[in-house]
Length: 345
Ligand SMILES: NC(=O)c1ccc[n+]([C@@H]2O[C@H](COP(=O)([O-])OP(=O)(O)OC[C@H]3O[C@@H](n4cnc5c(N)ncnc54)[C@H](OP(=O)(O)O)[C@@H]3O)[C@@H](O)[C@H]2O)c1
Ligand SMILES: *[C@@H]1O[C@H](CO)[C@@H](O)[C@H](O)[C@H]1NC(C)=O
Ligand SMILES: *[C@@H]1O[C@H](CO)[C@@H](O)[C@H](O)[C@H]1NC(C)=O
Image (cartoon, rainbow, N blue to C red; front, side):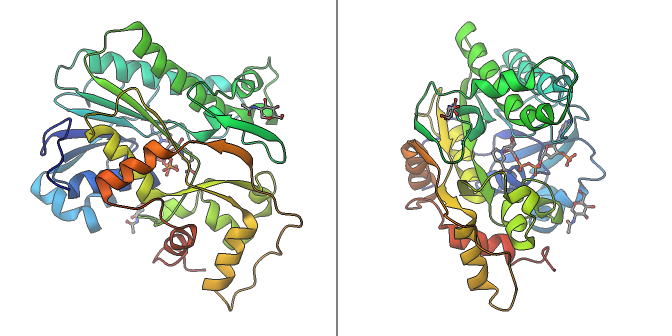
């Protein structure tokens, strides 16, 4: 495994944006374990000091891990300083706030791509840039309808129209802004690739729902903590999305690492969705691992998404770089999501 050729040499410095996040904290840890150095971009260095503790502590003490403040990902030149001397950048941060005004969500997300690309073009050390996309950029993941086969050119453009529908901005905008921001940011990535002779390689990794081990309590408290919604019976989050795909956070992190390190992966749009599943599948696992606990009832007439997606490139990267035969099972990932020190109730 360690004998694989890497696009950047071991020991190189890697910038991870939004390093405190569920996915980004695993990406950070995996790079450190492989002998790379990580600079984590965070909004507030003081509030993020937990990222220098626990499993990260020895790396922080040896100087392999450092944090830098990037308070606003949408600001002009936001990453000009943070990018100095890095061999790779992974843009994992996203605008988490759910608000009606698209200018507060989509615009900064696109600006972040611009400032990363512009900063990287001026920084000769940069060899690779990996952007975290989302399945929702390729498809509405609509329930009960046939959304066919996802390909390189699949885009959920309708959500962009919904988000930019004229004001007054209301609930429908608030719902559309996140997927639209992921889509618009990814399109900006490929626009840069098309319009410039970039001196570095670009890849996009697009997860669907993430499941698995949290490294901080915040990772199981937000709106995107799917398994915890089922665990707590948060129907307002469950009802609108009966079925989707779920990928283990460590697998998706490993694919990000591979998208940086693998010399053969270039201009890839890596759909890394994981398992197709309905809430009833997750509820069945929860009942099995918490036989004493009462959960919400199964939904009637459960149906998986009618959509077909080629994940073979992502699965090949898991094999090549992590020696794993396919995705971590949904059951193992749900167990990691639930059986940990942070979920106490
Ligand atoms: N979770 C999912 O199911 C899922 C599914 C598909 C795609 N994704 C994508 O995967 C990536 C990681 O998701 P996640 O669930 O792991 O994220 P997360 O745990 O919610 O973390 C989000 C990160 O973004 C930072 N952030 C939020 N607003 C920011 C702003 N305005 N400026 C700078 N930083 C900001 C947060 O910093 P603070 O610590 O300061 O709050 C945090 O580090 C994202 O790109 C997301 O779109 C996630
Ligand atoms: C989790 O993160 C918060 C800040 O977001 C921090 O205050 C807390 O100490 C962290 N918890 C652990 C156990 O590291
Ligand atoms: C998915 O299917 C629905 C219903 O047929 C359609 O409205 C939508 O445009 C399709 N495409 C995408 C990208 O989601």
